[in-house]
Length: 92
Image (cartoon, rainbow, N blue to C red; front, side, top):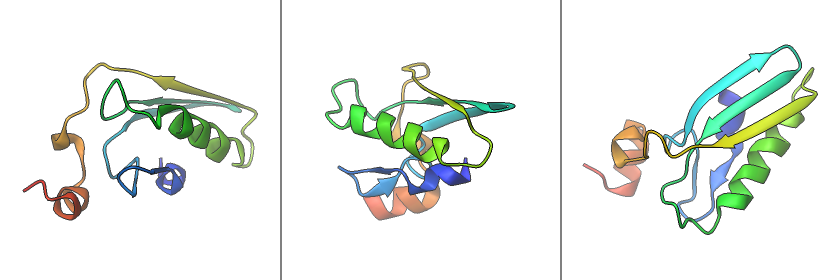
């Protein structure tokens, strides 16, 4: 999870972990699955985020296979953001 803090949503200028976009990371030996979402279904930077997730995780020692799985369940909402992200982006 910490390694994914370098992956930013280019529209918001904040990492995807702080934004609450990463739902789960499963490690099974050399295989890593990342369940993530986007702020909206029409997010134009979705493919860039998926590629950045795969590239970032693939560079970690011992990782041979990465699966970045986009999910819409549960839907993302501002409540999923960290307190710092809420403050920076003006969400109360």
